[in-house]
Length: 614
Image (cartoon, rainbow, N blue to C red):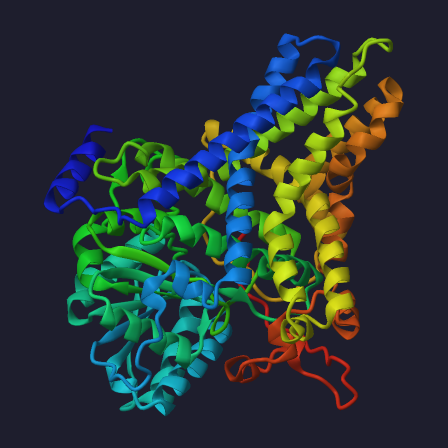
């Protein structure tokens, strides 16, 4: 730890401490008060609910577990409520929370050199090439190609992936030679993972560019979105990182359709609300974002944590750490809370979603070592802590449910298990808070005829919302058990493999699902059987939280079926605005989900296989 603290002390002393604006300080104090007061009130209500037959040590343990699960939920609730108020009361919600978002002069020349950084590791080269050609074509058509240089930065380890990348780059060179500057670099070793990949670029070529547009292998951005980021950063010299909201591309994967309609509903209200109090200390999601290179090179180099993996060594979840370091250096980190012009591929199956989440889980657990970093703003420390609690809350939620089942299963038949008046109120409050971000955006969308049509109409949107909410309830215990099992493994040195993600539509077999999800199935089935014998009257209350885990295997199989996805697309269920009115960049990709017969029936076409992350 000493080496790490020494590194940070030198960096912290090299820059002046960032100041909190007179507008943001009262907002942050008010938000902190609302969150802490809500957690305290809910904790007290839980204690009252459990004390119907006396308050035991078991009840104390239940209340403590409940409190640990609350911060992420409560923060999401207040973000959503503030976001809803902004959406309904402000003429320009984006500008209200992000002053730099005032529309830049669209005729202003692009005067700075921007590096486009595409970071790949064992990815589908066809997908990368497809997206890059669309983005390059747009920049060339806009007459700004001389201000850009594309760098394909490979950390691939598989021979076939490296050969495919070489073919990809030759194809790009053949098409764009003399028109668009291109560079391909492959590292034999990948110290620092993606952050090290970008750091290597900074050391070799970074000083020749003012900005860097960071892209993932599946990233797609419109020309308008890219140029808006650049013009905004040109106008604001203290702006260090700027990004749009990034949304999922249209898909025929049932799982991804469910996932991304929930994301579209929850994202805008949540991000508006968080931007209201985070302001210039916003998050960074690691891709589809513009970075000012000089301060990034000077102040955002990540240390190598002392100790071995999985929690020592290189920092895996680099993005939020780079954001807090950029803010510590006195530069703003901002999000434009608007959708449109920035896309990515969402995980096509439940198994791919779990794999991605566990990578984030391992990376976020390293943040414990960073909470005491000198010079950070309080908001930055809160962001790191919330990133940790996002996953730590899962084992406490599992423990809470387990203790709750033991409490009712072992209780005396004559003693009440909870207060019948406060219990339902507490449950309703918690569920409302969990779904608040999606409810807030749903209310805003339903208030606009144009927005309703973009989601397939009011009735279809409500049906999609209800279906996605039920699916989220089924998914919650599956993910909580996956996180819990993985966190226990981390304590014994287990780590995930950081490799390419499988992004293309594919069917999950029953055996694949069973091999990955048997713990969820076994534990949930055992809990259901035990409750049926020990406390059958209480089974109904726990069943909504156990059913998803018990059915994890069939859920994984069914939600990977493309035929089901085609049917859902025909019915318009879980439609997103990009399906109703796709941007030119999306149409140029010839996605199967956007290809239709004259009668409006979606035409299915197999998608290319991407590299597996197993």
